[in-house]
Every structure is written in structure tokens, then in C-alpha cells.
Image (tube, rainbow, N blue to C red; front, side, top):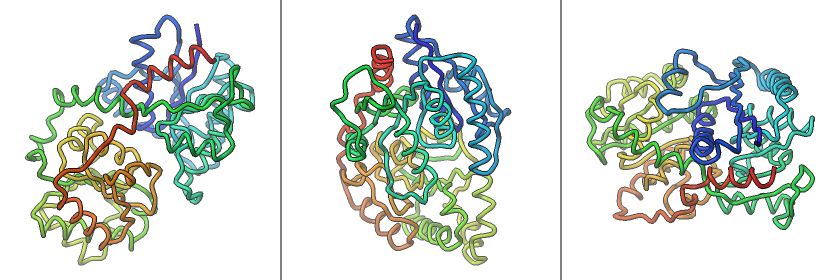
Length: 381
């Protein structure tokens, strides 16, 4: 029996971990014991039970309750807590997802005491080290024993950084194994799409018809905290909505919603508030989000995860950032990096609105990434 500790800390990681937990439950329950540790990086007690229940995700076995703090303090607390868990349970490996402070803390804690690090979503690069996420993902990759990249580009990034695709087992931190496995979120999106169709009533609640609206998410600090950038995004969305008589659905975190009052000028703020086509709503559940993505005509976002989900559901995407880790989406012509520039956002909308059909080749795997990862762990850890 292989004992593995899974670290989660933010909502996207919980969803990604669901794919591995589901694969273990369905195919590897006699071979793999999973201990789920929630760092408490982002944790809402009121939401937890509903969220885990809705997605049929195993509840965490341990919660470190770290909470919010500066990057350094939060990461230090996590390292301390994760190290304690690893010392007590002595697992065969630790599974880390993505690029949050929880990912960084897990990598540092485990590597220092020689617990093999397994990084899911390895090799992703924005090539912008001013992003905390870029530091986290690079550090985690270079502390890992097994690295699973969702895309060929990510796999090639690892090779460019010195990882040897010819390494043979036994794998170690000095002799790591790299694998192009597909994306666990691709596994998840289609698994949960069927569930969402049955359980979500979001379209009826918002009085939406499929294909009749744009979905937009904005949460990155460099957009929400910069008045010039936030105003450019909202001017563009407002003009697109009015000109084309399209609803723009904006599930906004309370913090982002609050920033509208302080970072939009008075004229624009009044325009946004009185425009019935700009529909600002609280954050939605994962199942509601899948339905909103699946039935949108187009998606505008600064989220890496939502960019991918747009591609999974064959929706063109306006990328409200200066760069993207998911370069394949742009290379396929399914996404345009607009940054927070009003004219670019409007022109990108016009470009996609004028396209009758876009190609969405299967670049994120075959929907079996989680099973591939579990099988590899069984053989190589």
C-alpha cells in the first residue's frame, strides 16, 4: 500500500485534487492510501460542507488553519504545519497542485526531509517572475521527484530548464522523472459537466439563454487594484454590452466588487451600475460556473483556470492579462491576449464574433490524466 499526502489550500486545488481522489476511489483504493491536508490558505467554514458535498470530494483529514497573512508569514506557517504532518505520517510521497503558497510550502517542507515531491501541473511558465505564482511553480518543479505536465509546452519548458527526459527509475530529486500526462481539469470538466446539467439552476435564475451572453471573471490584484487597468476592462465590457445588446455576467469576489467603488471613476461607476446588461453577481459554485462557461458565447477572464475551461467547452477567450501560461490556447487561435487595454478587448471581441467556427484540437489529453498519474505513482514511488 502506497501512502500519499495530498496538499490543498485554495479552491482550484480542491477541484484538481478531486480528480486524483476519484481515480483512487474507483481504481486504486486497495493500492493507494491518501491523506488530504488542507493548509487553510483559503478556507470558509460555512462554504466547506456544501462545496465538498456538491462535488463529492473527500473532506480533508487535517486542516492546518493557517489563514491569511503576508506571503512570507503564511508560507512559513504552512511549512511548519506540513513538516509536522509528514514527520508523523511518514508518507511515500506528497502530491502538490499548481502554484499557490501551499504548493511552495509543501515542496520546501517535503524536500528538506527527503519526502518525494509529486507536482501536478508542472512546467507551466508565464515567464513573468513578478508574479508570485511563477516563483512558486519554478521552485516546486526544481524540488520535485515526479513532474506531471498537462501540456507538451509545459513538458518542453522542463527540458529547457535542464530536466532530462531520458532519466530512468529509480527517480529522486536529483534524478527526476518528467511526464506529459494531460490535464486533470480536463478530466474534471467533463465529469462534472453532466452533474452540473442536473443540479445547476443558474441559467434559469439569471434568465439566460445558451449562447446569449459573455462570461467574465476578474480577480488578479494587478487588475483589481490598478484603477487604470480596472477602468479599461470595464469600459470595454460596458461598450461591448451596449453596442451588441449582450449581457455580460460577472461573478465577482466581494473584494473585487468593493474595488469597483474605489477604482472606477464616478462617471464609469454610474454607467456600470445603471447598465442592466452588466450583471454583477456573487461568486458561484463550481457546478454553476461550469454551466455558465459551457453555455456562454465567449469568455473574458484573467484566470488561468477559466482560460482552460473556456477551451475545454470550445469557447473563444479574451485573456485580460499581459501574458498566459496556456500559450497553446493562443497558438490555436482560440484565445487572444488583450491585457487590460480597452481597444484590444473590443477588437478581440469583434474578431471572435465574426468567426463562424473555431478549431479546438485535443491538446489537454484524453480525459484520463488522473489515472495515468496514479498508475505512474504506483510504479515509481
